[in-house]
Length: 464
Image (cartoon, rainbow, N blue to C red; front, side):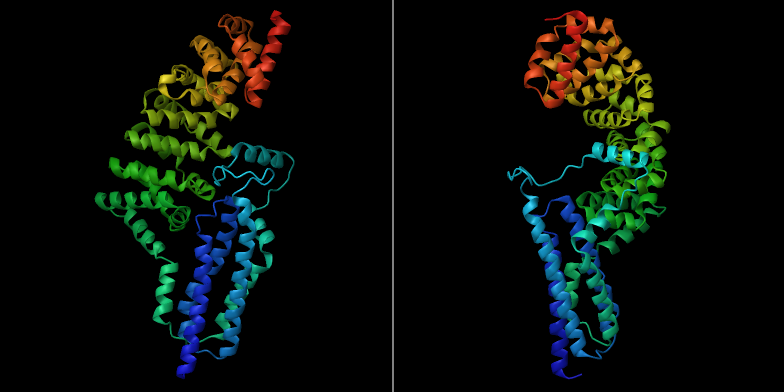
């Protein structure tokens, strides 16, 4: 080929890499924190990433049969990238202000409302409504022509190019855009299979750290087949390897697909094993992983039936401060599945939860949330009364946080409306003044619960 064509090849390739790099730099911007926007650009990013192996394996191993065709393909790719950038820029203003009030948000991170999600899922299941795949359907709505166009351009590039040598500049740019994380992860996953305790310990430690860093790493680690091997290592006799493995699984469970993969790898029983035999840190992270997995309704039942509740209650009563918080969080999630409530009460959780209503423990909000859930059952109400929980719940109504007051009032409402004995005890503890104050100045939920309880007192005990 002539020097002019060589120069043209390099120019076109540099343009292509500049387009890819500019898109990926934009998509990894720290200014884009909205989870929906991240889902949109990640889908497009994956499409663009397929260009690397094509460039490496197809374009640069053959000759260009038509410079004009190739030039046109590169130009169209650039236009497609620009279209994608414009789509995201239109989303960007919504990521920093509340859509309806136009008030600047304190932060732009979205907190998933799993309760609402579960209610929607349950309604859809009851009414035979199929939930669409959110990511795929949303991607198709946001940029339907772009993703298809980029895929077609990739195929066009493959069919219109042969024998182009990869310039060093392009290769180095590709390596910057696509760091070889997958290669590193694959090596670590292979090390998990080693018979050397030291090798396994080092590999689990590195995977633990990589999984903590970002979502991309979590996806790569799962795709490289690490999850089932990490689950196997929950039975490792080496304490540090076991601790690293359970912590890596905790970090990986941030992604819903990984949650499913962890459960499918039969991780629940091994996690319970760690909860019973692991180091303090391993027990904490096992409880936290069970909490993460229990966000899915089906897993609440599965975890409860697998025998996790008693060791979680043991951790609640005897664990480290962090372990107690993780256990309380897991037990709260599990208590939302009615079948688990009786098990939690039978495991003596109420005794520990009542003790944790002491502000000195730093766990009032978590403890009262679980008690409010358990108070919806006869066994739960009986245990709260027997363990001396009523005076402490009244104290939370008076002195607790907004969330604590709402949950304490909800628990007292269950106790009073289902037992005249408990109702008299609540009145004797002087609950009326703080309830009146709460009915006027609390959160909406707290006001409703306080007003309902005061109305009950008026009707049945002629208070006021």
